Length: 619
Image (cartoon, rainbow, N blue to C red):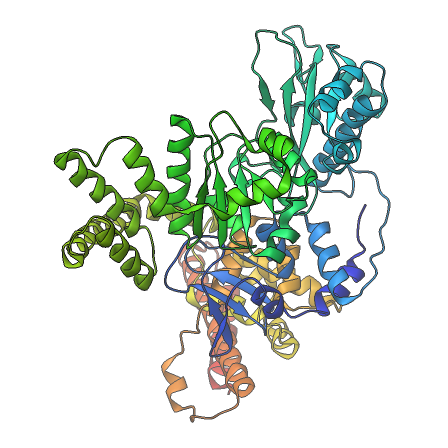
């Protein structure tokens, strides 16, 4: 399905990008723009800038940038169509869709989403309706998972057959190579396709916005194969950026301002069925920075449930560090030995589970208890190391007041002087600061080399001159009068740099057809991501004003200043073009072979000299 361009423009014009971004990023006004901490990478000094005038954003740290749709796509991990639809619903605009063949109109991602949706329905029908699905239905009945819950989470079953899914995909005209890319099927050595998921319970994995992005499959029989099989990473699925159940739980997490983190699919599903709906699962893998950052959009309070075995304790400690570093208030809960959230809530119910949540320890209490269990406080030497471990954990906390309170609690528990522990903390913080300063320095050369390569790729045959760069900035100001003035004297093909020429053509075409020339609209017409990043970057650069600007009186209206800048820049560009032509003519005159040819070239030279004189006199 495709949304008409006029409807996209209507939705874009109905909102202010500042209002949308301000819902998730704390912004403050600085000059004409708004700044805040970037939501796409960790930073302490704001480098994330939003322009209400141009309706675009840009981060000078990680170089993320775009218009309001791009922000929602990256922040919520949704498609372009979903981003448009979300904003349309917010402002009460009804979306109209055009049906079109996927290969002509839909984006590659939309096709992949559709394939996963079709596959999810197929697996669900296998579970709920097929005769072979009885084995899976019995499994869920034994696990006390209701049919309604199975439907809510889209649970399914992959049949034992080696080619049942392949046949289904063929019958539904699904591109088999794309299905292979998504990990639904694979190829044999002879080239034939076969099902990847066979005799497995299927758990669809959803994006935060509810799109099927991948699948997890649990084996039903005791064959000597992996217990769990997961979809490979793809353009719509990144394991590091996905939390199972978030699409179902995000509203409840926001409402309660608290998340519960568990390990497995069934842990989450059982808790959800029992009314504990503010829960997400790490799917049995270590928590990642990307997952923590994504969760921070909904709450900063979390209760972590991990198995009480050695591996579970280590996993919880790793998760604690990530969570604390991103300013989460972390509590750890432990169930009785041999129990996990699924088995416990099935046996004892929601109220008893809630009691364990209430008894959860803050991360420092939990770590202290674990060290005590290991006997680390029985020997003076080990006790010293253990206390240093606790101080190390306190150092993860960014808030100085919180750190001070935590140090006070450690000092009180072990009857130590606060000053002593504060001194230890300062040492840890100093080392941490030194390492953080070293990392950028070590990476700087590689980053600069990468940027240089990017520039070579973007700026193809000749670097953009300062004048060309200034002209492109002016063309992307969204001022129709200035755009018309520039194109009165300059054609897109006059630009020597290919990237600048491409950008000028985008503006020229839109202006020629009477289309919107707002930067937020124009950047959607640019297909090359590096070119798009280039224009967003320079759109937020401040003009390098020539010395003639020193005569401009303070308080002069901005549009007057911009118009003067445009006139000066266009004049300089025209003069540069004339000088280039004169230089070329000089070389041609020297190499000319006939008197008539020389005379013709000299006349052209005189005409250009006269034109140069006229341009120089222009105000």
